[in-house]
Length: 210
Image 1 (cartoon, rainbow, N blue to C red):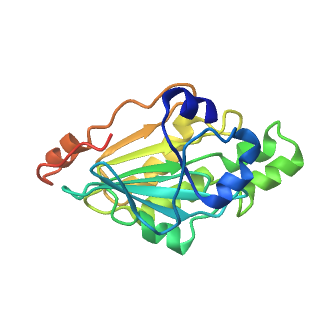
Image 2: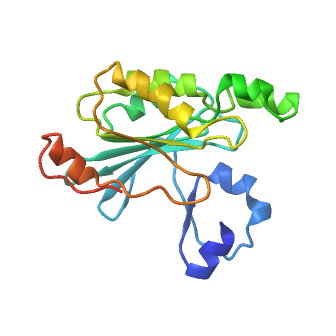
């Protein structure tokens, strides 16, 4: 993080609490810009809204990104622990969702991690299982949702096909007909043309978010 910021002279955006927790990783030469939960800020044509998640980290947040002119809205939520009411409210109405689907519960308990790590992952301050992600996706579905990407899958305690099947079934039950993808760990996810997806769904001309 600090190396990239210094090399390319780009700011690092974080809360003050997160900066304090990361001070050992920073040299003091980085450009730090602070934001606060539930206080939106602008980056070019986009409005970014950070909101708190429940996770065992220093001031963890997820975000929504809204294109101000078109209203297209992207939600990015990983390291959720559990989907609290404020998290669900913040993610309501997104046209695209990037949701954590970290582990299959059976694979987690049978997996190679120490017992303490398994308990942490499965706790309400840990990570979202496929089942919990499916329940959240089912709740967040609305007719204008055109794309869902599953992210932060465990290398040892999940399988991309399994995660897709579990979340896909939950979305199918709501009548979802959009794209569903699994984000790989070692390479970028392919671009999503939200503009084209919204047009094909009859939602009019919109700007691509990804």
